Image 1 (cartoon, helix red, strand yellow):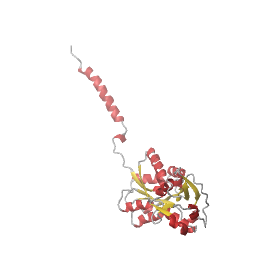
Image 2: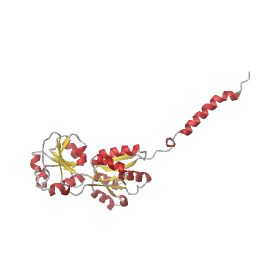
Image 3: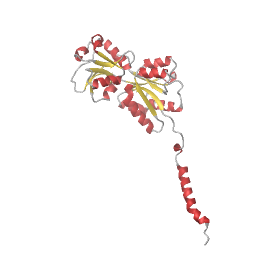
Image 4: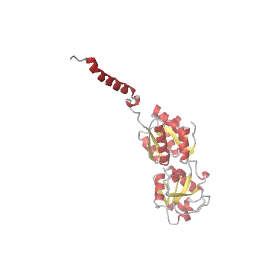
Length: 269
């Protein structure tokens, strides 16, 4: 008995059409090359906040933020040497000036993104009570211990700390007790490990650790304003870079920075 070839072909044809329809229904993103991440070189003190912002930025579907954290000075020097950074977020204006003078940033993109406060910390459980004001006897409070702080010649937190101690009249008495650290997170770690009696860090760093306690906040007028300038690196202005730049200035990211203890300066952009 002869077999109708059209009848035997129908199941295969239906299966083919089903598979073809499924393939055509796949989202275009699966066949398109994924956009490369946008690299942000950011001051070590922004670690928790930027990590949180990166997660929120990715969830928004606008791109991928790849952060690189270190001392502002280290990052600036790496950018000058050609490191592949798209944006730079410094913990002070001096290192942004350093890059601007060398043509390494898009100067028109430079803005002050955030602010911070300077605090004196001790290991958790240390009952030290001290009011930071002109004439403060910090040396006596340290006893025979060390004071950890960033190296003031290149670490912004150390630069602010030294300026504050000088203005308060405490520097000549504590200079010999200082343990200079490579960045503010190294300062925090030294106090956490109880290898220093006290340390000077940003308020946001202290808030990120349960192993330290804030003794007091330095008066705002005892040191230059603590600002975090942001800029696009020269030659890296692309749609992806601008999208991240705008996001960091926007209300959503600025609210997240505030939740991590920073003072937003560019909200609602």
